[in-house]
Image (cartoon, rainbow, N blue to C red; front, side, top):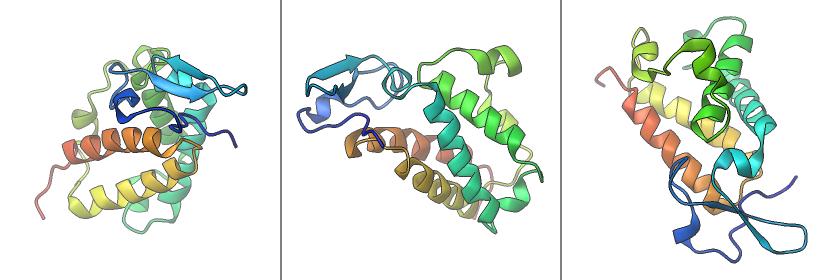
Length: 157
């Protein structure tokens, strides 16, 4: 599996903490750094499909999260990969299909407390760990997930 965003010769200043901030870097086969503007440019479209699939494989086995999702996880998998692809610099297909993401509104019908947030983060961290990102790039993506998951909490403990 390729390692995306190999940080062997980059500093923390070169790692993006969002889709539009600082450039992402990957190491080309000849060892040179290739600077790209977005995570999407770094990993490509299929990476987001694979991430969403790994995530929902975890959800399917999680006793806290599984009851929150429909029996068929194909729809949620498609929507998650589309949203992440768009957020991280890919085409705006998600918005074309579903309108503005409005994550808080879309998740409002579900009780999301710290238990659900932590279970979601564990499934996402496991899925992300299988994505072939270098540690600094993976950390930058996980920072987004930590923030997003906290933003969706809508129930007290």
